[in-house]
Length: 447
Image 1 (cartoon, rainbow, N blue to C red):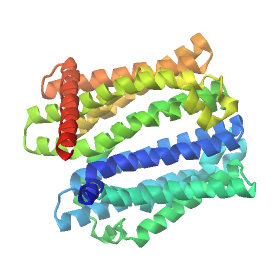
Image 2 (image 1 turned 180 degrees about the vertical axis):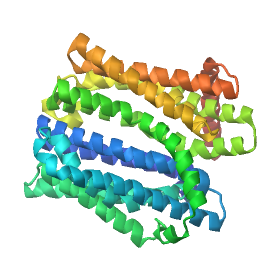
Image 3 (image 1 turned 30 degrees about the vertical axis):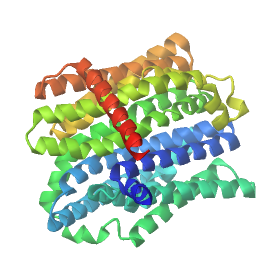
């Protein structure tokens, strides 16, 4: 029995899922502490600051992560050193540009009236510099498929931040400025931890090659679109709400949206485990197998999300109260959560179509798709605001860019290998039933 438990804990799929569950749980704890201790206005300011910070960071993570894993995973020892060193070089270049923009903005901070924007321009360069070593370490760890180490990195980052927040609450020093300093310090400590463990492979910087730099750059300039697709629309919503409805409305909207992390957990976990399978099928020139694997993961997630969405809609008020406290009870937050849940079944097709396009060397399709989705999102957001003058209009408008992304992804994949959209749900149902039967049979054998 102990051996079975040990084997389960060491399983890469379990570690990937466990890591995402734990980190999402810690993220919710962090948001609970911040929402309950800061005013609605300050909570909205923090949401706006982090949204911009993480969106811009997506250019770095989206540019490097997928490209790094593609060229690093399964390569020879010499090749992995070249790729790691080249990723470090590109990471330093991107971080240097972001930091330079931040520094150059300092003389003009007095002209910025929005506190969230001011915080971003003043401190973003520091954040990007402090977070670079642990970010590169996560790329290396994913390339090596050592998900236990990835969990340690994430725990160091999110765990230390929570500890600092708790310390601020105990000391009675809770304010948005101190929360910011705690955030920066947690990133510094995480990078020190990654460097001390030698997980970032910074020593390979001298082994970078022009060829590897070009490989990562040429792939990354398109693959960044896939990563942007999961962040860009939320951020555009954040901007529109911030400058039309205000900080308090933004805090309410974000609280309802934050609970969608419960959907993101299986999406991220399945994506991490699906990518190597898709890549292996593509490298074997098996188009039929690539589509089958895509259908399997997309369909299973969709089938699992349907009952979860129904339960979530019924119980939406409870988690809103637990995280936000009494001051958010009776606000639009619970209904925003319900709106997102109603079209959550579109998330798996959009996400896995994009992932598959990256694997089959069509990252440029994702790039152009993201630009189209952004245009649709912004136009429907403003239309929703014009019609309702509330967060409901903006939340409801999110269905249109997600639907656009799914349609474009389906069209592009059909040019690679023809398949029916509805066959995804059929395969998903069959695979889910098979999984349940296997689990039940294992229980019978064990008993």
